[in-house]
Every structure is written in structure tokens, then in C-alpha cells.
Image 1 (tube, chains in turn brown, yellow):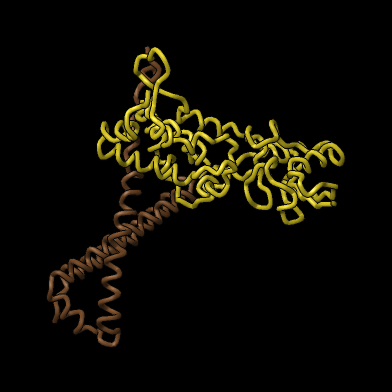
Image 2: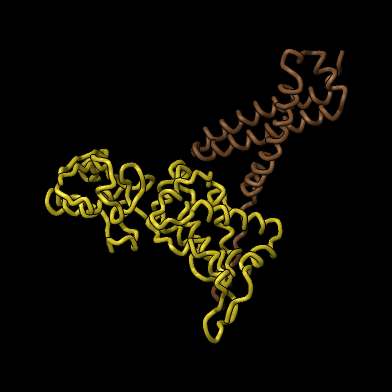
Length: 126
Length: 250
């Protein structure tokens, strides 16, 4: 019997943490450019004085801008939720407080994400 | 010269909580903190407990928190420290007495990453050869002396004692990057666990704390990248990564 074969094989545990680590880096990079684009457009090309209902309605005629905002919203929410999940995992060890905190996080952020998604997809300029 | 040193004392048989005690002792500017601790123990308070062995920065026995930073008492010169010098046990470990901490869990984690060469290849007639480039990949992490300074400087470890900790990951790195080793799969289980490398938040305290100057955070990053590469292609990347750097020189 050789050295390593005597140990049997360990199954890697799921890979959630691995992929969340990869996601944080990829989404962080993408978000940086999306947010920079948003900043340049809304605060340099246009000014906040111009931004009103008509401006948004005019912008949302284009599906590109709906997709842009939706992508930024989804990435920001999942990125943020994942970050807070990691903090909860680090600092809340007792099962009940941990479950409550995670439940609160997912409920609130899930609700906000659904609301934002609904606006981006179904907003009808009057 | 006279120096002031404040030492955190705790005797579990007598004290309910740790407390500070200050001593004024004679010392030379080129004395080390370890020399001052010896003076306190030998001339002022024989009850003071601390570990030390080689006294020359090799064995890693006397890691402790000196003026708020994890350092080896045998490497810190008195002249370079602000007074009163404060000395406390490493954070995150159970204190056995005074500056002595219980490192049982630390060494369990060390053993969990299987810090030894694992290979299924038949033993060669002579040594297992590797090129200087292949040797260079894990040169930094061979310097680890297992003092525990990095792990006990890590806020992720303070927050969650289950975290494998930088020291164990450094040990894993030393073998994962070795072209002769084939134990990546066996080590992946413990490293890829929720308490494994992913709990590292890249805070860099470990790099600052390492008395051997190991780039600990970089080594942890290397292990993360190796696991991601493994996950994307379970059979290819580790073998390729380990064998990178050209053929062994004969």
C-alpha cells in the first residue's frame, strides 16, 4: 500500500464558498465599470437637475437601459448579500441567531430585488 | 538602563480574569524581550510562565503579543520598543498560564492538511529530482516555524476558532506547490471546507506578524487560485501547476 492511497478520498464540501469567492471578484470588477458608467452618465453627461420622471421614462423606452440597470441591481444585491452572509457566518455562531439574521437578510434583500426587477422590466411610461 | 515592562498574568487556579503587572528591571539596549522575561522570572517573580526553547528565532516557541503585535520575544530588541513594553499571550488561544497558550487545536489543524510529501510513485533509486524553478515555487513557505504568530493575528480566526488559520494553509502551500507531491486531492477536502481558505478575508495581519517574513497572504491566495483551477478542471490544473517550471535538472 502506498502512502496516499491509505487515506481514502475526501469529498470537497460543495464548493459554495469557492464559487462565492470567485463571484465576489468577478461581480466586483463588473460592478465597478457599471457604476462608473452610471456615474459618468448621470452626473457628468447629465446633471441631477435634469433627472426627473420624464428623464427616466424617456430612458426606459430603451431596453438597453432597463437591462443595464437590472444587471447593476442584481449584481449589487447578490454581491452585497453574499458579503453580509460571510460576515454573519464569521460572527454569529449560535444556530438560532444565525438563522434569524440570515432569514432577515434574505427576506429584505429578496424583496428589494424583486421590487427593483419589477420596475426595470414592467415600468410603463404614462 | 532601567526599563518598564507590563506583563499580562493569569493563573487559572487563582485568577478569575487576566490582569496586568508591571516590572522595572535592569536591561541593556541590545537585550531582547526574552532576556527581560528571563530577568523578571529569575530575579523578580519565579511564578512567571512562558515558553522558549532555542532562543534564536528558529524553534518558534516564544511567539507572543509585544506592544500589540505578534512577535518572537527572542527577536525583539528592547531598544526598538516603546515603554512600558507590554507583553501578552497570543490572542485566540486558551491561556494555560501567563504567556503560555494551549496550541493543541493549532497543531490538529496543522496535521489536518497532511504536511508531508504524499506520492504514489514508486520510490526512485536516488532522490526525487526537481529543477531550481520548481523548488522556488514553495521556497517562501518552507521557512515557517509554526510559532502561531500569523494565525493568532488573524481577525477571521479570532471571530471563528474553527477557521483553519494561516499557518496550516502555509503548510499546505508548501506541499501543494511541490512538484514531487501528489496529495492535492486529499488536502482539497479540508482546504475547500467552509472553515478552510475561504474564511481568509485578505486582511494581511498574518503577513505583518510572520517573524520569518513569509508572504502569508500571498501563499493563501495561491492556494485559493489552485482550488479554483482544480474546481474548473479537477484533473488538470494541480498536476500542471505542480509540474510547472521545466524538467528537473539531473
